[in-house]
Length: 475
Picture 1 (cartoon, rainbow, N blue to C red):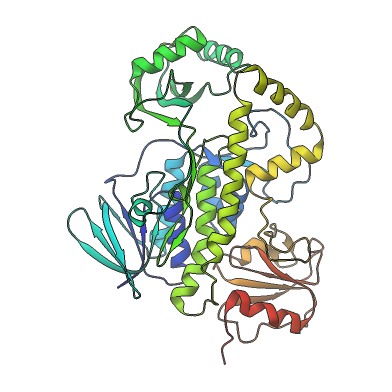
Picture 2 (spheres, rainbow, N blue to C red):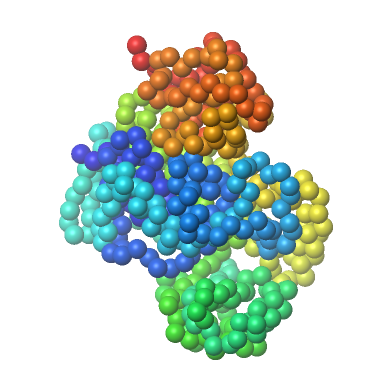
């Protein structure tokens, strides 16, 4: 029997596979498409996802294929500079196309021992007290202890489970594609700059060698949104908004996306869980979708591994829904707000002007940047120190940097006192005695995802918290 079947080889599923393999969990990834997608649906990683890669020792791989940006404009395209002294050692956005992200995560997962089978479509599933039965389109049946649906907004897993997906349908549609552009680059740039003064859902971004990523509002909402637009549709809408079609030709791919906003009612049904777009879909405003899925996987991976390896505290796996469902709900709300703010109607334009004025206040700007980039996420661990429930940034230690100590996906007690102990949990928690001017507390207990589970200097208090996250001690 397989430990975990992951359905979907996108960034969420591949990140999850890697996280599970760090804990020697047997993982099989099933992907219905025979080849990795070439579509560039997402363009980069936000700060929290960059931190995630640093925590697992993957950041150098990503930096080698991306470009760093430190710029504003992520909230509804309102162009404000980032505030100083953000709570991160990685205060930038990493521009990197999604196919590259997928490839790097797939390489990482397979290096750790995950198996990826492409051209394998899930068509049925059932579960009992001992495991999950997955039925594939070719008639194959597979058994696993758990199954995780990371299979996108039209998730087969979610539909087979019968999990509700309430929200709003698409009301505004946007056309998207990569194609060659005959117009000179300076002409394209000048026209785009003028159109974007009023229409934020319009853009032509150069990829090099005359190829551009083209984004333009659709005329209406297609009856079947799974059918890609034609090149003529793209040209027609470009002429409608820009007065020219820029001589676009030779499309590499064409697609459409809407502003559908939905969230699964529950992320867990017995031995089957949902993550990424299978659990939540929303407009791409602020570039949060791919990042939200990666962070789902980062939260779920160590908890599911703990369950399989037999040391998970009671209800640990249920904290996945408890922690991540509210985070996604907040993302859905902020993308709803952003979609309103890019409307060209008089009322939303007035609100946009007011919002722009408010963002001149540093704390408002800071709040929105932390919201979009997810470094402001705080899980509800109850009352306590302001660090409790937040992830700890990559602070400098005497023996290096914090994230260099977290590559193995284990818990970590960062101890400035030298008087504390994790005896009984050393198979799950590392203990580092170090002095850091950047750590404002005597000691901090970090979960494998880097969120602070405890702060203090009292051994008895620490012993009351270790079982909550890391189970019973070894004898």
